Length: 301
Image (cartoon, rainbow, N blue to C red; front, side):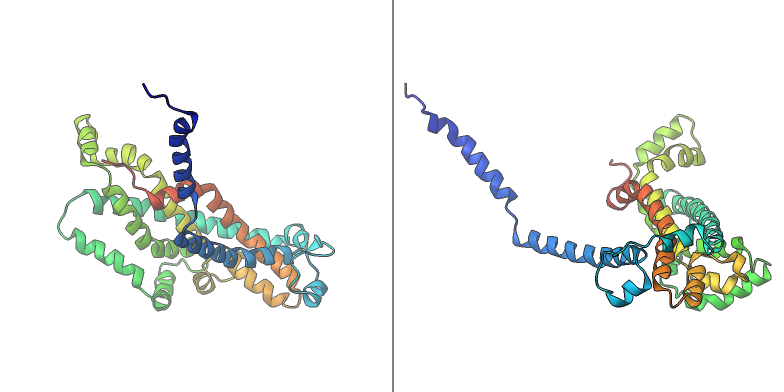
């Protein structure tokens, strides 16, 4: 009987190790993708980092050395003035107005888009696809074209100069995209699950409320984040529909601050950075569910 030497015993191990090393070796396409990701990340991160660090500089530092990213010395009074100083009253009032508008708009968007997407996905009725196509075409509707008729409609309803009169149109503009996202997610749920729920005495709305919505949590997070970002960054609608400075949202407040403090670039950078932090915090909280809603379905049949 032939004996197996140590070299022969280790041969399969060495082969497996070489194969693993080969799998880890970067390919050309992987290297290109990595470079593209780094470039995209730099394009996104560098301006934000410059604004954040610029808020810790003085105007003299920004003028003398605008390229240097590190403040020398660090100036904390810019952020302190925005949060606690003479501009704090206006800033926190605008934050509150933006949060109120965003809360109303996101609640209306999520509620109505869930009901509409459920009807388009799970209920068969005449004209369903035609109506759904109208919502899809809403994605192509130019926003600027609707400003004048929208203003007339809001004025006839007596909602001009009110935060709810601003939140409702913003929710309406978020509905088409939300329905387009939610409908495929709802359709991916197997019909057997709905049949089992009906056998247990669950109604159509009961299936929607007790089973479908909990399963659709990632998609709901996606819709909420997108509606939040769209509402938070909205500038034209608040400019047209709101009357006084006490109703301004953060985009309008930032514009007014830049007009008043145009020469104080450091404090303007601090004001701008603080105005985007709430939206970033909301995204970070919902990031895990957002990624799941964009990359996977609800239930695999």
